[in-house]
Image (tube, rainbow, N blue to C red; front, side, top):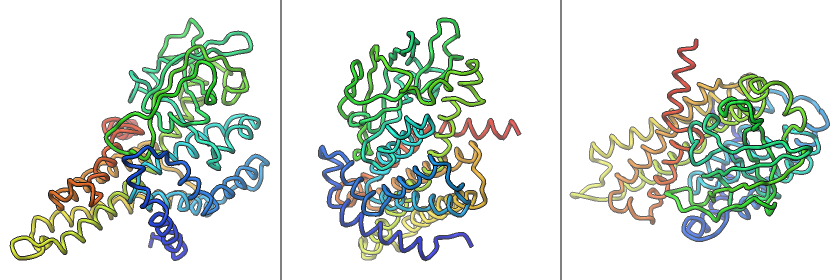
Length: 409
């Protein structure tokens, strides 16, 4: 039977204790104050030795050490996803901020040259520094590549970058930013241009990072805009270096590889992990709703005895089981040395995001007026859950990806 092992449950208990002791007391300040999340995240990473584990893994990978076994891949995935579930029970934004810095930005740079990995990736993988992964633009949300307007022009031994990005997680505070743009050679049509990724540091001339944007939810995850105006960089900041420029535009930037394919692989991994975020939200909302239904008395009896309330609670439990089983299936593919297809990752993300949003809103409804107030926490989780249907690809984009894969088969 697929499920959590005893060691996994012990880890969950340890993470839960940490969250209750170190995160929950800061929730209001993270939610409504001006507290960036990075110090509490660093404390979490250090407490559980994640920084040292990532450092050892980095050294092994860079030295061409033993290939990771399927069982090790599985355990690493559990070590990543289990804490995500626990953090998302209280402050889902922390997971977004940490994941973008350590996973998206850190791993994107790690796949570049050895010098780039040593200089920029390792500090992100250990959370010594904060990273951002910048692809979304004001006019190219779901059409991330086709509508991309940010450009790079080669000027001798240098590159000149121009453009803007929006809705960038960690954007306001990032020390290191992966900036994704198109190579303007003056000939290739915009939609067919090669996509390249560059590494930018805070404070570079022409690089501006906005203050945090105000938004509906995920307040513990700072989001901002980036503005790049005639930023000059050398080959050392092009991820992959000279190799990234090789071949024609379609081969290097299209389906067969390059920054486009790397971004698509990132999307697939990110979408699969959404199930862990959704599960944390669902579990917490269900727990609060059940406890409330047992103790809230109306018309002389607990509201949990009313059939309409029971219907909502039952539906929430079905959603919890479905999302958890999707997560187990994802982990099992790793144990078998396989990967989810892009369509499978999209399906996982589509269902989980919808389920988390619906469960959170049902929890608000079960609690009635109290659910609408911040005291019971479900109003925050309802606001936080909604973005799961938007970022890393909207619901509509997931549907298209799934359908195209089915029709292609």
